[in-house]
Image 1 (cartoon, rainbow, N blue to C red):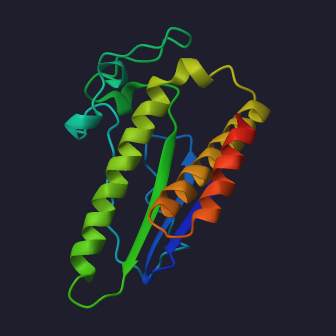
Image 2 (tube, one colour):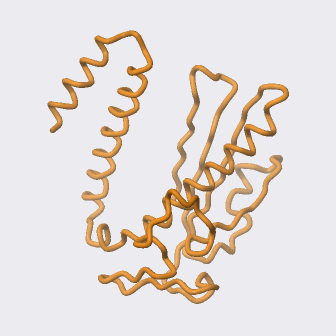
Length: 184
């Protein structure tokens, strides 16, 4: 399975983030999963340990600490040190993250910072996906697609709303509020 989310910021045309995802039924052992896509690109491989890598303290929740979490529905959990070698079933989510910030003098710092932020977001998101397994394990593919659609709409409304708060155009904000009321 593969997915890509290229994000570009229109007010920073020299800035882009491209995240490509592939899933495989292994423990992260495929070193060549993205070789066709990035032959001439300098890469650094980072393993993200959803149980033992540190997350920012403000995001820590004991209920999402996978060293102490055990799923009631699947009995998965209590990930011990070295869990990647002992857990079954296991799936690896491979991410190829490409950041470009083509502004002289800032490029390296900004790209390194964005890579760290993306890593932190992926770590937190994958921890939550595991910790919330009891909420989604019984969902059908149609249920998942409907949930994705709802979250996409809510995210777009929030992003538009936040952008409008910083803008002087209030008529668009009224449209968002009307849409918000219609969807509730």
